[in-house]
Length: 329
Ligand code: ACO
Image (cartoon, rainbow, N blue to C red; front, side, top):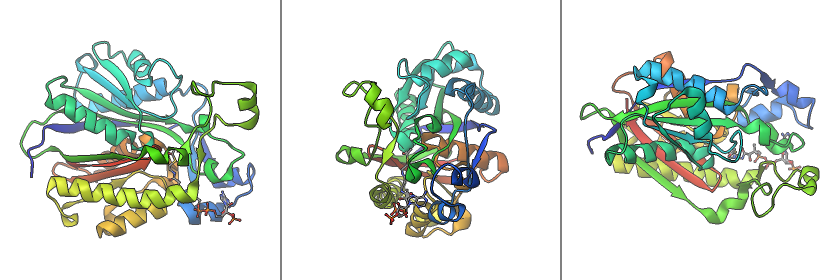
């Protein structure tokens, strides 16, 4: 097993108070609580208010992460945000979180890999630590997906929710704790399975776009589902092989929360009993890049993650992108 270079320490999260339940969605589109629960495992999701920008929610999650890590905000040298639903298209979301947080000594930038963004971000952070570029890196997964959700499209609007999670990455203090391996993969040929057709420089905002809703997130659900099951399993296998570990060595699987059936299929592939798998999709739906750091924070605060816990985190998302990280806490 390779010696860890970087470790995760300190976590935080912010979830808006406003709940959008399946019963609420029944009044908005042709769906039912039973269908949503059976097909996705989701009961409710959170919706940010106008004041709950990612800059504001990110500040709270980062402050919690710094407090639990015992690190001063002035010592943060990189702030890295993974998001697919930034407050604005320019500058990066990380710049706006840096400003609200007051992390004045940090370089701030975004990593764009949709729902896999947090895994990509952790991997970038590990690289920056190992090259000596940075010592205290905040990795933030932040989403306000309800702002880019089409509430006329029943196949996507039932899935998505808002929230932010954060963790601090820094040089590993001893030979056992930290990131043991990571694996990233992308297949850009599948980009149009899950994307936003309009609003970029090829199709800039227009009146037609407002009318046809093409600036909203669009997804081929069934196809995406098939790739998700395959890619989550691939990512787990590759990251485990790179860490030199087998399924029995993993204490906790924290999968991206996209669909309970995808999570169960991944656990089955890994031969892991469901009591070793963290699930909160019933409460938050799919919060894309924020889902894993939110879940990690819950696990740490609930005592499911303690010193020595070996965690496999795995995600897939638009791109298509996928990846996994093995961490010993
Ligand atoms: N309520 C009731 N019926 C529905 C709903 C709904 N909300 N949505 C779709 N249906 C219908 C369809 O119209 C279809 O009807 P038909 O057979 O008459 O044509 C039927 O249900 C089956 O549709 P499928 O798309 O095959 O349903 P499936 O079981 O695949 O579930 C779902 C759909 C939940 C979207 C699933 O495909 C899925 O979870 N896919 C992956 C989603 C995902 O993880 N995306 C990536 C993350 S999102 C992001 O990156 C931000």
